[in-house]
Image 1 (cartoon, rainbow, N blue to C red):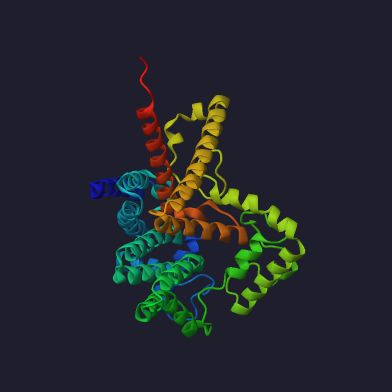
Image 2 (image 1 turned 135 degrees about the horizontal axis):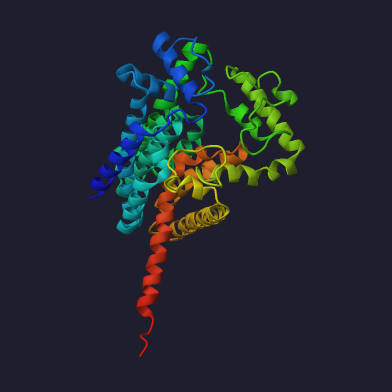
Length: 417
């Protein structure tokens, strides 16, 4: 039955990908296509592929491989949708083992109809693929820990390492979870060694590529830029939309081909500003969180959007009325608040119960890590997309718990004579 649900979701999402999706919606899509084209023309190890190593090489190589086989940008969305759908099965299995069948079914149904997954599946951007890889990796690690399956631990860590090759922010999930698993296996050094090797495979290949091509053994050189974009006197909490005019950014603000030393200097500049202006830096946190958590569509959306918007079924003449606008804002705000409360409640419930604590930790950690990264850099709704699977699971935990409590109270209520 679970496979049927996923198959149905794949079919209707495939129609969206083929007919209505805009793969170029993210601002970086053109750059990723350009990098993929450079890889195809000049080779994987060419030093002329620019602006690498600003980003890790993983996603451009992924795109280049699909284009080399199909020659079609639509195929990128189809492949990503296929992998996302497969990750839905891993999400179901993880939720079932960690929290029970009711939570698993709830999470599966929400995953199958979630508009953010539908609307972004065809994006030429790393986020959809990172969503899939994080879910698969965490699900395998949970199985390995709870069932003492060494193969699942090793493969799960390997998959998390592949996520790192898409964007280095995945290190905040891959490294701590690998360390946690290794600590649990500390009496078995062979397994610990295998975990370390598995984690290093993906990032190691990307670093080796950059060493050969550029002479710099780095994964990427965008850390300093991202931190300074969110921590300067012109920071807005979101991408500022222009080259920063702080002294520390004059030389490298628009140059993605910066060297590792330049990237480190940008990071030091940002840290100097934070230390000199701690109140201003902390005051940006609510703005960063808002941009990070804002809906993709509707009156509360900010910068990143996708086309799956149920409001489109309403005639435009109705949508433009004051009554509809007021109702839309009110309903959107209510949904945002309820979704946030369900997430927090699900996290607390999952972590408090010893029977679900391991699954709760594995679901909560990626969310916490990405929120922390947002506070350190800047916020955008698409940056939370890789954690949507875990958000769905925790919200499902809260929903099932709420329904269970309500049913118990209804059953225990004395009958009225």
